[in-house]
Length: 180
Image 1 (cartoon, rainbow, N blue to C red):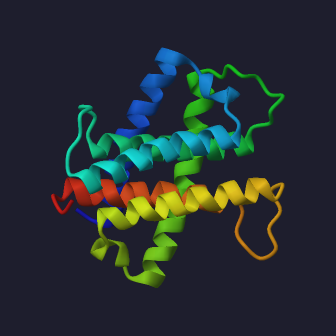
Image 2: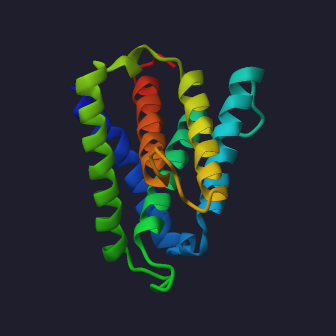
């Protein structure tokens, strides 16, 4: 399988989960502010890190399911940045699906460009590094929020969400390959 096929396969699993949860719960995520989305991703990344460090877990959800949740919350974060707060909280699935796909298309394009320049260096990285990088991106977003979303030379919140999505995809690809 090519990298793009692996990427699409990993995202397809996440998309399926997201759309099914949207059918079950509606778009309850519309009430979440950026900091709340960051905290949801933080909880999942922190759980992965704890499992990695302790080499044991007591809850059945595996690490792959946590990376899928991280990816989906990253998508939610980007959709929330695009949607206006005053827009309807409840969106139907026919509205949400193209928004999800648009975010993923942006993340995929970014991945392709970075893979070109970095030569798929991520394939040599550890799962621990993906987790740490996700946690680092979350701390960056928190600092940007503390700075009233102003940066001097750094990328914004959206760029950090895109990187989080791609780190989660890379982890899922390597898990699927049996490398993690």
